[in-house]
Length: 230
Image (cartoon, rainbow, N blue to C red; front, top):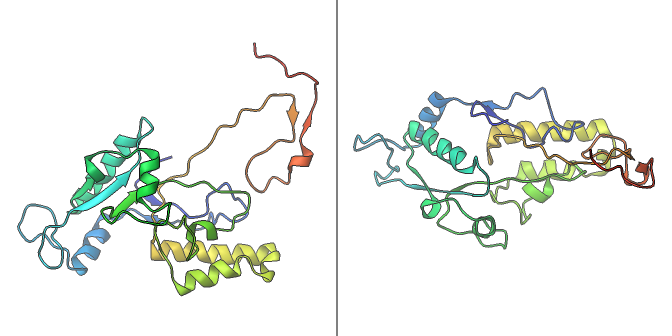
């Protein structure tokens, strides 16, 4: 569910053993946003309601967002309006939403970032293993935010260390990492999305996601032929 009131966590509920439900994330706080921008020297110099950069020059932030769904444009416009409420002039890249492949080329899927993109709104999927190095590792190609730090490197390594064969230890590591990401805000997750996977009712022991205790060799069928829908 989309909500502007809450910073969600970098490990989603699809990993129930590692998603830290006790972590409230970071709430939406317009006053704090204004304070941080003021502190950083981004002020409205000419009185037009939009902030200039610390040198007093016009500040225009280019926002890349994908087309493809009925809600893509309303959500992108909502973000732009929310940024305007704290005095940030944000415009869509090329004045419009981007096609899927062009978007991922622009944010660096092939190793080169488009220098004209300042911020982006993307999505990612997760596998069975909670290991987040493929998205947040220092050299990961899908680390589109290009965030890196020594602390992040340390926690990434600890999460796949020999000690992490202990589930409780690994959970502690990833809880600490989720808290660290909330504090650092290299990315700002806003929602979790669900995927519908239809399965015929003759199929048993079929699950998606983590923490089910079921694996592919457990899948069974109860009838030779699939029942036809009514």
